[in-house]
Image (cartoon, rainbow, N blue to C red):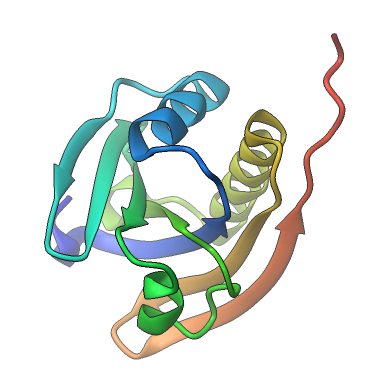
Length: 142
């Protein structure tokens, strides 16, 4: 997604022993997402899926505490970052974005059997708001 078109980004984090591909496959299944496309850079690898205009960006840095070094709001020990990127062209309200974050956070927590933390909302360069919502795994209805 062109960063000029970004309305807001919701940042979540998790601790998981899974590989990036395994984590993304669990997310794809739990959230009914299209197949992820993968790439990597010097410090991290990531997968991206796009659904209904929202980009689901999941990253897994190679070194411990990289996420915390990049962003002080990331919970200590987190080795996965999940960013929901909402485009300006989608016209998503803050309420709709918040509801999606809650659904995603809870679904991932349950599917991955780990706590998911919503730690920051990005509204533009120099305009971020720390968050502290935690989603714990829920028992399955099996």
